[in-house]
Length: 235
Image (cartoon, rainbow, N blue to C red):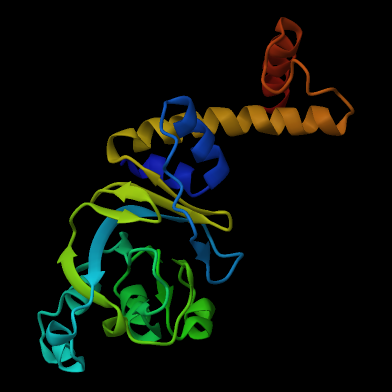
């Protein structure tokens, strides 16, 4: 992803991205059941770095596994690249936490762009106060070991019914989280700039009292000419 594309996506809403991808035949890129812990934070944009949980098996997942320096959950926190988004497959199960405030704080300090799980976070009020975009299904007090066993790092996963491949571009805002296939990220950013320009024009005209018929979507030559003139006026 080009740096210019990244900057554009930081200004692009997830609904706009959803519409663009829908036009191109991608209908299932919005992570279901995931919401920001706190609203009003800057838009999250970064390439996906993934962690996959499976159902915990009691004989393999006691509390002592955290003594292992190679425990996958800890390794994922310590190896997630700067500027990336850690995306966790917790099987849409928020009854046990995917992580807590200490791990998420460490992730933030290491320079990650954000974190997403289709499970839950413990210490969610503390995570919500961090200057760090964080998205989950619901608050959860029990440790992840209760139900989840961390297994694979940076492999294709499912998160909220969406396939997420390492390197896919993750965009999150107050509406939720979109997954952009890596090879489409620059194209999405280019299209988003055009689309948001037109939507700004539409908003102006609606406020002036114009009907949306023929305006949104653009279907008349009169509106097309008016849009071109509006762009010249706005520079």
